[in-house]
Length: 294
Ligand SMILES: [Fe+2]
Image 1 (cartoon, helix red, strand yellow):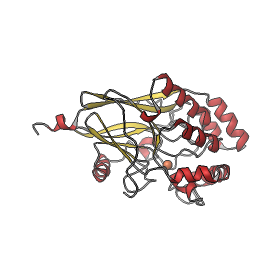
Image 2 (cartoon, protein in one colour):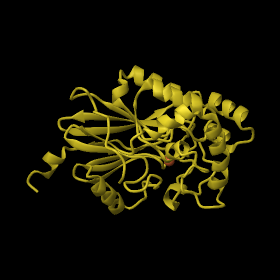
Image 3 (cartoon, rainbow, N blue to C red):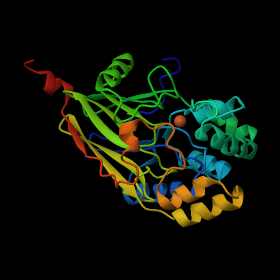
């Protein structure tokens, strides 16, 4: 993958937790709630990590961008940042031409692009495409989509072998990715896993308005990974979106917890529409310990 390795040193002390969250998607109410939860958990900005797509579907792209910069947490570049930085004509999500997602994205992308100023877009341009750090004894790499393609959708149902190949390219024990918007952790073998914290700015199509974040807790050389719901002022977010873009179906999605289009979802994930999620936590052993004697 191209792009710089950069800047995120990981936890300052061996026992520090790292908070991970996915795309804020211009959802100011959700980002405020996330920042408040991080403060409540005593997680310093240096120990918070976002997997990109700061500005997208929601009402407040500029305010969300400013709040992220003010927070100072680590951010991986998403395809949205890549496109906004270049003032590209679309979001670069990789939707099929003529699909519902394609049509919807043209509306929110134009709104967000017009709301962001040159300074905000220049900041997006500086974001790293991957962030490498060590937790416990695990090599962790945060990316947005896939190892070689920023807008690759990797879902729970994506074959494990494909995830292993991506992890091999990244030389990572734990890959922390975003883009697909669903929270899950899949173990790929001893001391290896694929992790997606889910999205912060849009619910996970499970019929609830909650959004998601994760905690990575080093423990004895290994790592405990846990998924967490975040309830927030989704009514306020929907109201703001209706004011910003009347008739936009994403406002209803913030309340119902159901995506306005399922175009991008594989059959397995589509079948779970409206089913309340409860993604399992995982304990990843140290790959050094896991590999001993094998
Ligand atoms: Fe994305």
